[in-house]
Image (tube, rainbow, N blue to C red; front, side, top):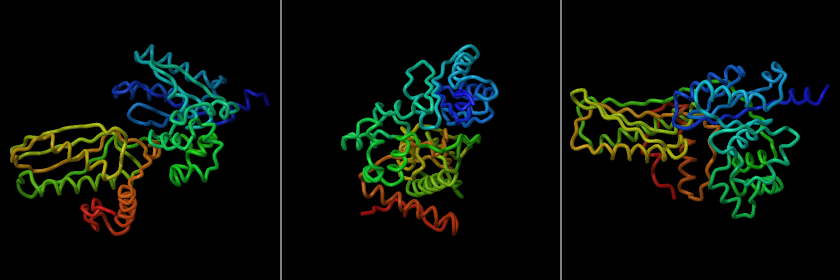
Length: 334
């Protein structure tokens, strides 16, 4: 078998980054990807994964070729450029696309070149390493991916935590067995509360909003998703409504993050004794939670709340969604 033939047998992943804030164009780019391969995984709001193994075998081309074809098509048909990273795993492909500056380009990394290519990169360039994780690593003297790969995995786990450290150590070595999963996730998640009688803004409304936050967070985590934005809709007596959307700095599914943003949205409404008939809370731009970087926190109370949140999810899954009141999630944990 030729070297080219062996290369085609290796799982080859393409990670595509589209221009931000162009949802209609993003959907059109996904359609272009579907013409290259039947295995496309959307990563809203502006990225996607493509498994190229079958496409390369069909077209008889090198790994870089599909990326070049995609750029030509998106520029000529849609008027936008894309950044394309190609490699033997999701981590390598996504790291490559992240290194490409705007407006676009193609960077392909062969299986034999992964270790040498990853080694000199700064740790923050490795896909999945969050800014706070990179800071922890740099403070420990680990400033490049090659050093991260050389450090014993147990040491990395002590620095970044069990799961986060294990993933970082593996991916620095080019180990990432995750497949590209061709599935469409719901674009949004909605929870709502209707009041039995017209209700003025106050403690009852805040309690209802807190209940919706907990229900939305539980729904997102059960689906394995995270939200990049949040929309609050207030319905008033007489049929009037008020809507406000804000994007999160990162995708979240934790109750604390959702609560803080939901309260800011409610404050932005500037209610002056408005008679409410209902509240709707919608998580927007949902992404696969597996694609979200795990943040490092030195706040013990925060970590304790996350543990309590996980336990609460298990209890609700077993005994029903209303078995635990939402206020219990936010009690101070010392």
